[in-house]
Image (cartoon, rainbow, N blue to C red; front, side):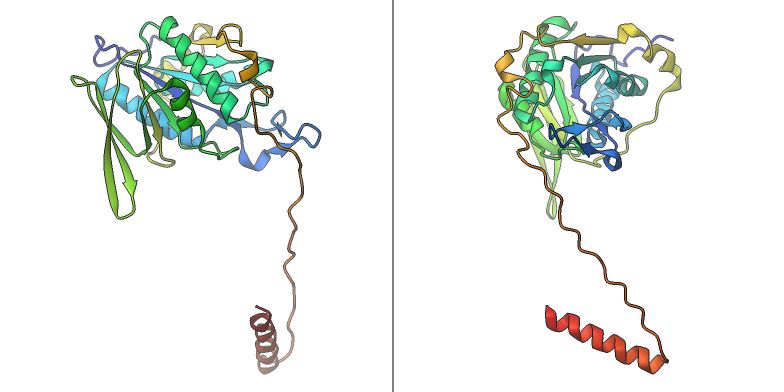
Length: 286
């Protein structure tokens, strides 16, 4: 089934959502030799904070029209998970997949994403106007990718938003960010080819459900484009492990403090006396 037409088909607004596919937190393992995350045996899902960014991007599409593209970096087996975004209402997926990208830290990752966004400006029907990122990833939790990407692209950014409104006539993005005791309103300019970056606060909204009317359309091969390092004209010194100035130098198990298991027996009075003695020992030791 073809994708439903946008409410404002004449609009050239192009939103790009940077999405990371992550292993489920309870299944994360670290390879003791490479000191990298081992994902082969873990179930994968779209990074939960990125789902919040995706929801705001889709809300922008619902209200203002245009298209929403997904941009992600990872191995080919990320593709099935990313197609969920198509079933939610996104228009296309761009997957950056190349062994040379492996082991990238946030600096190399943001460089690679920036190269892809530059290419999108020439490849896509309309150049990007807005770039969305989740606040952080559930497996790394550095929170560095949104700001790093904005720096590589040299574009304005609105951070940790919970809501976004657009003034299409003025080409202004207007975002709401929560602060202690209230909220503040931020504005930044945007236009096709000179986008604004939006990072979305974790749990800022409730992501929508799959639209089963477009489920079959979302499974078509044509809806996914895969680019490698050569496609992006990426400098090999800036990608993957080679382009990553930070790495894990050592792994160590955190000390495990075992809980004491003390069984108190006796009459109620005897139990109370023993409990008071134990509590007194704890208080005095601290």
